[in-house]
Image 1 (cartoon, rainbow, N blue to C red):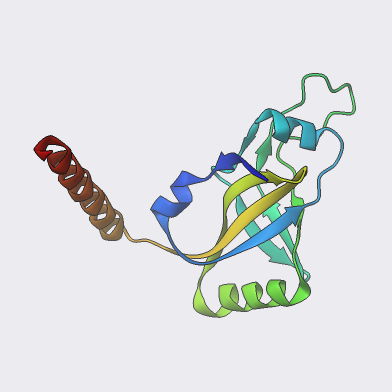
Image 2 (image 1 turned 120 degrees about the horizontal axis):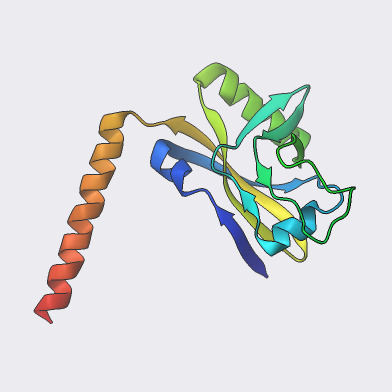
Length: 149
């Protein structure tokens, strides 16, 4: 069973999503309890590949209130659990084609925290405007259909 904890809506607004992967996260101490409570953010987070390992940077996981002095650091780098071949493919595409890797969703599946990450290409301002126009048009059509019936 999948329970979504955090969605990164800004990523779909700022990037064209090319490919998606599921990755596990290495968590320590009270981090999983804080995630279950819902105090996590992916707003400014990004994925970096270093020495054939993937890390998520700037992901915020708030302190767990019932934790003691051994509470976790809020914005530390966290290792992602991916297959070696997946990491190589991602690193190659980021280096050669100018893509970036962004987190889309943090969720719990069978008690484990998973991260849905995406290979993405940045949108220009006019692409974002075009998407907003399309959404407005769809909303207007749905509104007219609702009023018609």
